[in-house]
Length: 330
Image 1 (cartoon, rainbow, N blue to C red):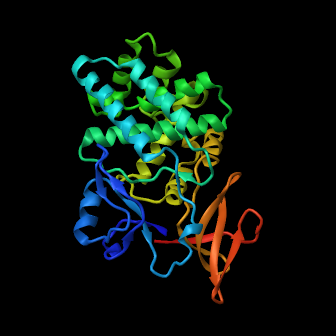
Image 2: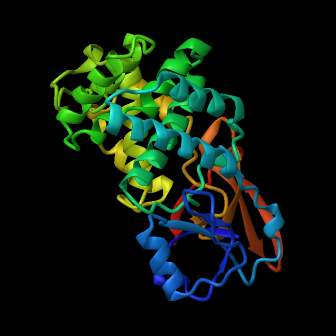
Image 3: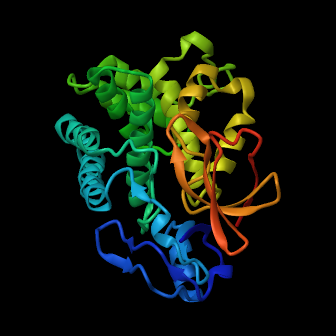
């Protein structure tokens, strides 16, 4: 099984992961043959990467793919977040208890294993579905970063709430400058939300060098906002909007240079695995292989399986320091 960008080149390939719509209805089952019609429908509904089963791969069971949050749990969270968002449209009010329930469920069920990833297996039928799925993914990644920063539970909850609701202002006006202040004002109306939460929502588009919409820079930007900013950038890049794989998204974020806080970047890079399991790669020694597992403390140096002389050999890049991934095969 390998990870691939969803293009017409996958016609005739066997799907390696089940795809659901955002309401939990099975859209395309694992083992289905990818037709041009199916590929087009998946693309139109926001799916840009899939796992496929290789005809020549007789060791699929070695590839460990775990979900950061199980699909069935995530579907329930999406339904609850849609209720929150619909309430905002009707009542101009954000329900704290429902938002807290989502964050608490994520915290209780998140898989922090090095082999867990956010699998892109939920279709998006409309803008509200996209916003809901994106918001939950940004919350999950922000919580992982906060955990790696050794935040206590109170801080993780308030960070998670801010990340979950970072774009809530878009339900009123989808404008980069305006939606942040609108979200800030919405949350501030409910005394249950802490200043750390609504301040992060207000500042989450600010950049370290002052090039954000508010012109804030450096230490004037709240740390939660910096975490949500980089999580938001990353999730946008690996979604249909950016249509790139994790290593490319990380390269693009790295290229932002002094626009991103260096410490937050280090926390981010230790939270995201550049080369997901199932990715085909070429090493700098010319050998072609498949990423089969990750190293917890070395997110850029996974374990690669290579077929040489009719047998499989394994290269752990955490230990094989002269080897590195030179190219990804799409």
